[in-house]
Length: 118
Image 1 (spheres, rainbow, N blue to C red):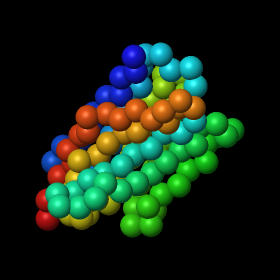
Image 2: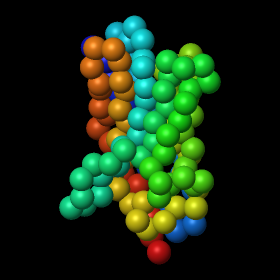
Image 3: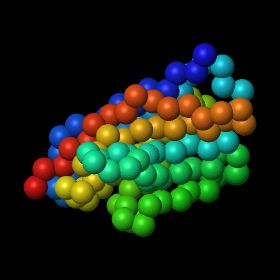
């Protein structure tokens, strides 16, 4: 049984910052990649940031609209991944989901709401 739990969401003014955390626990033998997705009301879920954990140091990728503002990083020893979000914009408002990819399958968290007010 694998559990994925996100935290750190909330309400912030435009230009502010938030840090999301994701904890993965349970029968995790190995993790290939860790991702952050988001889904805004009426829109499809989109991939925001990824870190490929099977590579030394971790290769990261970002959605174009968050490049330079968001940073994904991990704590391998704790099976945790974070998303530091700076200079937030109202269009960043969404439910943010953590996705943990293992060789067998991917696991999703329940999501954490991020609301950016103008």
